[in-house]
Length: 190
Image: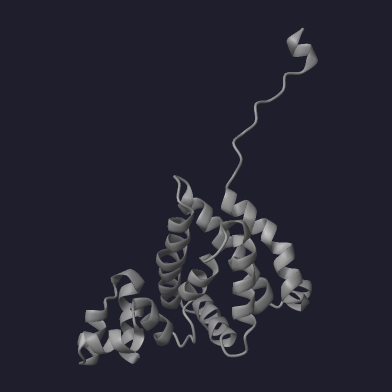
């Protein structure tokens, strides 16, 4: 774990390989794959997370696309509300706010494992922009509810918060509407 943390902080998420961590730790790369499954799993373990955020997203993406916004918001809230899963995630966010190296690695992880996964699911020419908009909405919820404990957001039951926030995520998933032609005024037509 110490070798993985050092490597992630030194080389960033994209620059860290399982082989490099294995070499630093003096173990076979197959051992890392066996225990952690993937680079995402190793990152989650190295950052002392009980679950990888990309695993949470993978679960939310399964199912009827019509209900994707509710699943995304509901899955995030239930994961962060969980007494075993939430506190390590909160600690990672706080650490990222305090340490530029952790922030860089966490940002790279979010870009590679969350934004890219969501963009791939969405498809289309502006999929990355829409995925980033969704992540921005979710990051705001996480910050308001779990980091600063913003009154109504922190106190709201999960179902109510999901109901209130799903339309925002739905709008982010859809992307901006094309501009509408301006109607000519009566005086301009005359």
